Amino acid sequence: MSKRAVDSVFQAMFLLTDLRVILRDTAPVHDLDEGQQATVARTLAELEEQVRVIRKEMVG
Amino acid sequence: MKCGLCLEVRDIDETTINIDPIQVGGRLTADAMKAVIAYGDGYSVCDNCRKPNRLDMIKSPPIDAFHRDLAAFVNMDEARVVPGARRGFQAVAGTYVEKGDPVLLTALSHYTEFLSVEAYGGVPLEIQKSPENIITADAAGEKIDSVQREFGRPPKLLYIDHFDYQFGNEHEVKGIIKVAKQNDIPVLYNGAYTVGIMPVDGHDLGADFVVGSAHKSMASPAPSGVLAVTKERAGEVFRTTTAQADLTKRTFGIKEVEMMGCTLMGVTLVGMMASFPHVRERVKHWDRHLSNGRMIVDALLAVDGTAVQSEYPRTHTLTRIDTTGSFDTVARTHKKRGFFLASALKEKGIAGTIPGATKVWKFNTYGMTDSQARYTAKAFQDIALLNGLPVSH
Image 1 (cartoon, rainbow over the protein chains, first blue to last red):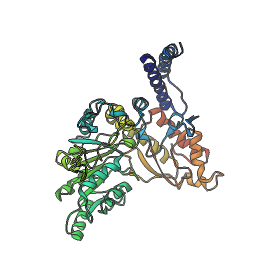
Image 2 (cartoon, chains in turn green, red):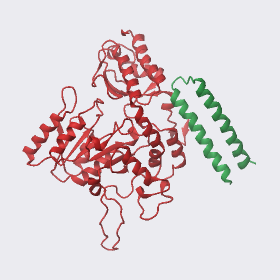
Image 3 (spheres, rainbow over the protein chains, first blue to last red):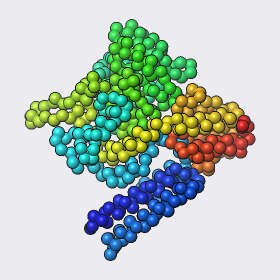
Image 4 (cartoon, chains in turn purple, red):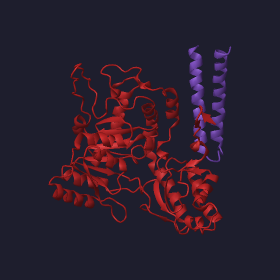
């Protein structure tokens, strides 16, 4: 298995962790302000890229 | 949702505002959560442990530098990580206390301080609290004199909590340490509710030992903590083994006796390390957390019949409140009885109070965002109004 896949798995979990912390900071109503929404959008885009790498490396 | 077969996912901090008195300062930072993901396996920090094979000397990850940073953080000379503040108490007591030795605690000391003295045969004796639930320097002086008369010698050690766990009250730490020093009594400063949430300067206080709880106040997994000491005490508390096995003639290098060799060998330590830069920064913003706490206390006090049992105005985010004259009057006739309050809070997304408690209870507001603090203050008043309790504005 490639180091690239390993790195992407960790990176994906770290990005999800960043989302988890936003959920904590905005609990209980999770009414995100514009800045938080932009952060979530950027994080999701990075996450999708990591998922793409994982799929390519581990599924083919 | 479950983690594996039997553990429910714990999402209390993702779904609610948690005001549990002991949990809020130990919530992980994002970096600590990431470190937990990467270092969850058993002895995960030992990959690069080389001779002389001791935790505080490992260079990769930079555990050696972290220990120096920890000592500097509380302005002491040397530090070790320990499995919780209680193990720090135990290491100090194990070094100095012998059977029959008097040791001074206070009327508000945590039970683990008593156990640490008991473990070595010491006699725990309490400094009286004032009617306002404050431990004063005068009371400490009186107790020292009393011990001197009774035992014919001064106490072997004195433990003082800067803020106690029962009221979150601030005690006369500096004055108490000064009195102890005048009587040549070493002092253990218990910073379970300070180290990691507000600035602590051990040298300025005059403490011989500073103990902190990382899982309570340093955004770290449990059990974790810090024991920091002066250079004069380091050789005593962190003494190294001199044992030799009788048959095999083995010796055990420079392992430290009170640390039982190495202490936090994996996820707890990396959690501390990953959170540390954030912790070092957050203590500078204690005033903001205190301000939010005061706002919530004042919102509760606006509910007629509510009283605060902690000192007021508040100097800590941990508060003991008495709602016997307010929420408890609702509980007497409510169909959910005493459980109505925790239930109403849960409906509003606030957790961490003891279900059924409507008389005297504690909460801690540390770590909230300003928005969450305003929400919590309003939630208490909304619940009061909904249940017919007058609220002054």
